[in-house]
Image 1: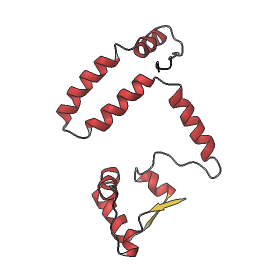
Image 2: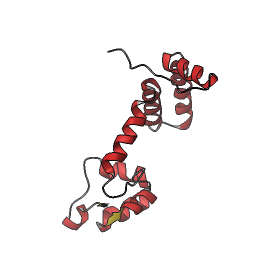
Image 3: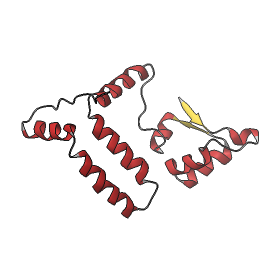
Image 4: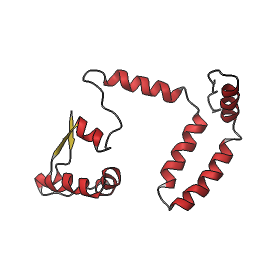
Length: 135
């Protein structure tokens, strides 16, 4: 598998947020190289550059996706939402603001049923059983 930005090869400029997201993912120098030269990255290069989190062997993508989805589904909805909010919103500001938000959101999460179940499971040396959120 390979991935690339071919805009330069056609006299175009990456839009749709690509010119802003790519440098944040792989750094300005690598993003400029990819966007200015219109090159391709192999799956291994994309992994090494931090553009993708993992590479699945050919023919196993569906299986790998199902395994990851199962892991996410078996986790705490509340904790997953909190982590996503902390990371996504935390990158919008400076470190001090992010740390303040962390104190607030982690404190709120610690009052949740999922946090209580997770702590009880840890103490009792068992796997936690998280309940789906109410509709």
